Image 1: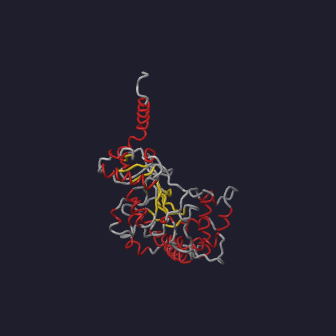
Image 2: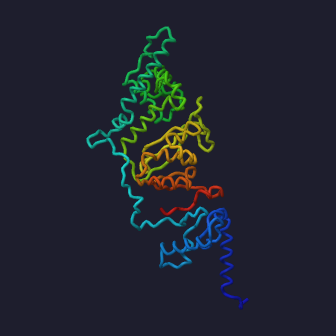
Image 3: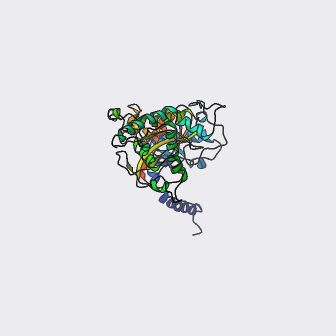
Length: 383
């Protein structure tokens, strides 16, 4: 065995290492090809791939050995070039990553009060509160006609002060994690209840307000439902989103995701998500600031085609996750901000569309399923 070529052992070692890696990267090789062997890409001409490879080597680092540079990238069947390593941070910031366009300036001036209650009053402004007050009182008026004693104090009309107190109790029940607790426990007189509830209003009054709470004109609701399944809450919800955008200026990075608000009542808007802790509830898709999680834009999922509301005919031809991101990012287009989302949203289609709107994207993908690799990449992209 001493007379064998010394390189034979190196070739065997390389072969064994390649076999070890094939278990982890077998699916990747079906759709991605390393620069070391560009001729394995069945959908592209080998001569063109080699020229692309040589151009990449010359442009990236002309001083580095060719054998080292050949392992830095993958080429996909769609002719996309994927880097195996994150881009260097010790370089000047690229032009497309510099935020030059501000989406909006905050309406909060330097002399505005910044305490929590003042900020809350700007998010839930007087216009919203008066609309809730008007239609809640209209429902109370109809409800009290069912009783012989319509002048009972529990059936009195609601005023603005009591409305704010009622909303405060709802917030307080969330703080105490008592959203699903029986109200008799909250208003208990044996020392186990919460005094702030009893000091604000009676249990009967609280339940009547909860029953009669309304956000829109019931006489116009049926007509609006033909085009808007969320007609009962849309005016208030859209106004809240508008106020959120006017009071805050986003940082350079935002996130897009969905959350399931647990709810098991009777509604055609209920979604079932088996992987969520609550499983049943309302799905809200939102765009938030990546630094402090501030809610900036969002909508309630109301069934098929609801993700494409407000998009053009051409945009509605995209995948549903792409439509979702395009709808949420409309207020920040052409601002050079970065959008981060999970594997459900990530696709080449989305990255291309965001690039046309001067937005960059960072996302996770699933690498265990081959079908994802035709559109997704599990390695970082050099922007």
